[in-house]
Amino acid sequence: MKLLIVTVVEAFEKDLFRLFKEANIERFSGSDIDGYKNPTAVVRSSSWFPSQKSGVESNLFFSFTEDDNIDGLFKLIKEFNSNLETNNPIRAVAVPIEKFI
Figure (spheres, rainbow, N blue to C red):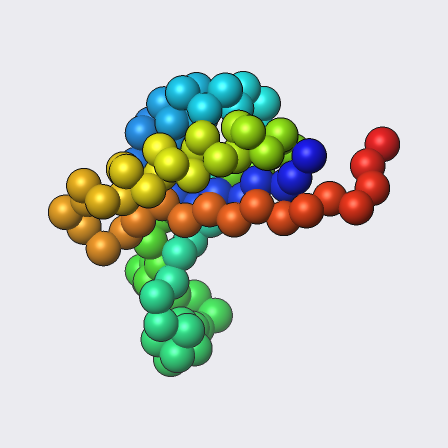
């Protein structure tokens, strides 16, 4: 078992759900996040009352799942990213779990 962490821009969220289903990842959790490409731009644009969001609306998902499911998902994500016309690929990492209850 590993911890799978995936980030995706909001525009591709439904695509990611389809990929999860194809990879047999049926249980996962998610959260809305803002994605940034250049951290110095965030510091420069920070203020107490910003008039505009400077980040990209994104989502972070995680799941505790088996290696076979992760391998399948990584293949699907690689194929999906190779056909993108934007510079916002789906990103994923798998982290080993030492112990769990």
